[in-house]
Amino acid sequence: MIVAVVASGSIGLPEAIPMIMGANVGTTLTSTLVSLSFITKGSEFRKAISAGVVHDFFNILIVIILFPLEYYYGVLTYLSTGFSSRLVGSTFMNLQTELSYSVFTKPIIEVVSQLMPYPILLAILSFILLALSIKILSKFLYRSITAGSKEVLQKYFFGGPYRSFIWGTVLTAGIQSSSVTTSVIVPFVATRKVSLKQAFTFIIGANVGTTLTALIAAAFKSEVAISVALVHLFFNLIGALIFLPFAPLREIPVYLAKQFGKMAMKYRISGFLYIILTFFIIPFILISFNNDDQVKRELMYEIDNSGTSYYKKVIVKSYEEQYLSHWFEYDKLNSPKEIKNTPSRIFEVNRRNKRITFDSLSLRLGQLNDCQSFYVGNKQYNICVSNVLASYSYNDIALDSLYEFTIQYEGENQPVTSILIDPKQNILISKQVFNGDSFTYREDLIQAKPAL
Image (cartoon, rainbow, N blue to C red; front, side, top):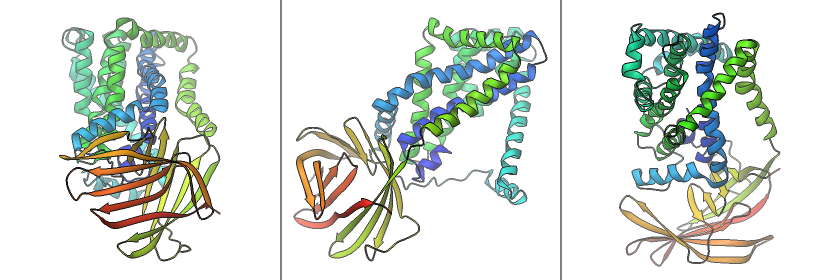
């Protein structure tokens, strides 16, 4: 779903990354719910709830480690875009790319949605069917894998941490659902066929194996899909590299899960309170705290393309103290006052440290002649800081500290693009394209004011 939403241009990659982290935590709810089915079985419940929440604690710990690194330094963003540019051959992520593939379940979904025209009831029914299918599939896998034999499990699946990690990766990649495979582990631990330590390394593998789903979506050559899929892979892979090789670190989630199991055994209500707090109340509280006042600006551009003049309006929506803003573009207007209901394009501008991404073009705010080299296929181009203006004025607009970038493709008679940007306000002041000695395109900001 996140791949599709990002590919449609509704949100950008920097926004999608925290959503992927949240999805990794949210998916652990299934195994926790399965563990509650043992609530009437005494000591089995303690082990079951420990097996259910160890996946939660593992993913929460990864988020605690990687979220600050992503927020302040963009580690996952740079890793994913860097690798996707090498795979696809471009650093430009086309936000207008559509995922041109269909799923065989789509006709079934359309029929069910017509039979059940009420979205809320349909959502409740879908959740019930999902829970039932996971429960049935978990029991089927439990019987199929073990055939009731503890020796089979210990010999073939959990003979060591790396063996169980590999099996967790392979089985989850085949099923394409970590919720199912981690739910299967719960009865193993509850019935003492597998220890919690052995189950934990299996769960680490399941976290890596579940990334196959997004990687399959990326196979359709959408650059943004590849980037999102790689974020999911790197997030889980980094977590595996942190915890799997080091036995003392592996003990941390296991210890936390055991302590929680003891508490849940003593106070049965704590399991339900944990689910409500972790997966519902705390997330909504965080959302409300970050719901800052939105700032809107209206920008009007005049476009002169080979003698043809028209206007373009951009509505900028941003939040105070945040580096990200969204731009809603209304193109080819006949006059500055013309309004269209539907924007022709939605994209984002974000600034982090000394790098600004404008319309999916990554620019580094460095010194003069600071250049970066990129490739589109086998074709190289350079982006350089050609000038830094201390001040800039246009009509009644006064700005300062503007960066001028030049984009130059290799070879003769290649177009040269000049971009003038105000990084403080995330405003594109002007953009000019030269083809040889001829001027072919110009885009100038003629108005900037808060939108009414």
